[in-house]
Amino acid sequence: MTETDKFEFIELRSLGESMQAIAEKLNVSRQTLYNWQTEMTEDLALAKTSRLEALINNYRLATEKRLERYAETLDRIDTELEDRDFSRVSTSVLVRLKIAILQALGKDVNELERVISFNVSSYEDAHTCNLIKYEV
Image (cartoon, rainbow, N blue to C red; front, side, top):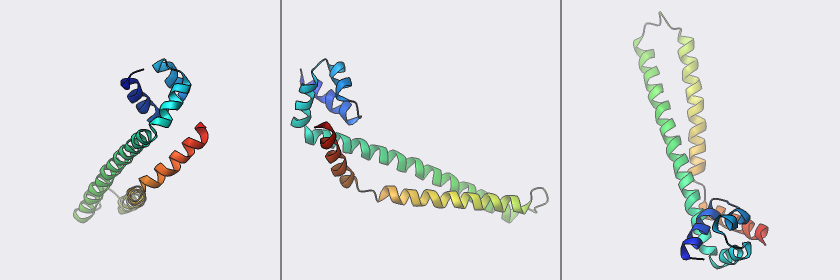
């Protein structure tokens, strides 16, 4: 058992791997893993928090890109509505499209606000308590 094994344990555990799967992969007993878990509680919590923060950040970035695309599409629709004579495409079709995009935009803005205000430390505390409860 090396320090590298312990680092790999932290990584695998932060990914949600079971003790059995990790024991088989690292070729150590589950009891050793439970001992490491007790010994490295803070390291595990930090790894899980870091992983969660990365997921939240990736989600936020993807949502921001989607919001930018909505805004660009709305701008194009607005420009088209302002410039066209409406002879080939009905106004109702463009207005319905604009309403649909505005509704989707509103949902994404609400979701993004929820994600940004998410308190990682509250999640971490609750998650750690659940891990301790289920692992014992």
